[in-house]
Length: 257
Ligand code: BTN
Image 1: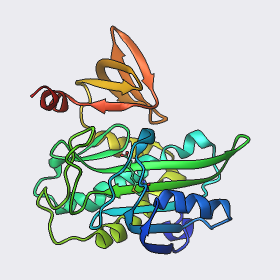
Image 2: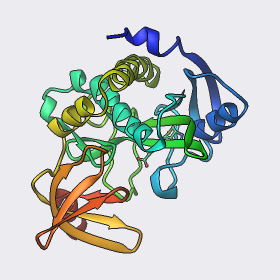
Image 3: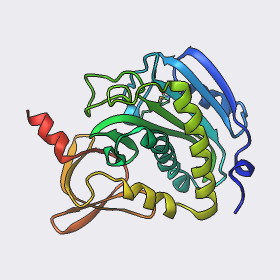
Image 4: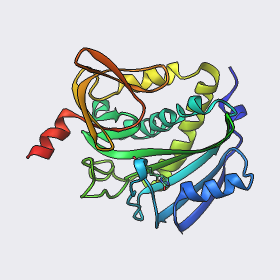
């Protein structure tokens, strides 16, 4: 197996006090030919974005960073890299917790602490013809604060009792871990990432709700398939879901309160 260092060159980190979005800045640089391993971090973002076109609150103190990869694989395969990012975030946070059971993933790539969202991942890519030109892996971690009014209940590392770790420490450790997961994925494919994700998945085997635009589907979260899609069992049928927002039973309960 190739060493992780051989796969991803040393990062070229560009740090900003404030920027529109670290993903957007890296998109601009990728289009201009920036190399794999270019990374952008900003203390604040003025137009931070989340999945499904949502806004991502980006106050100072939290982590907002993006990494440019050029894996040279099929676009569908590269989508797996969002799981690598979530796993790397989990590797940073888990040792800080009194119990590893507090940390869970919510499909596709949210990281939850005691059932509340502490981090999210946003992939953006450029595809030409059938080929992937580049992919930007953006990660936001609520280190010191979290939005009170979020679609899904949120928390921060500080609120969850993980004090004394700053955004820069989280980032440095995250980059070390994503390097390892990236190498693992290049060597062995999605299977080990899928297994590691499922080991900490929330809601598997339970009834969950998935919102896709205006459509809401309730069913049993049966599995994560070999491409990272959510398999939902509804009325005896297995439905394969590739995009949407998952709501777990605890979150439904809170919404009804
Ligand atoms: C989500 O909706 O869960 C994904 C949130 C991703 C936020 C990060 S912050 C750094 C990067 N730049 C952005 O504009 N978004 C991502």
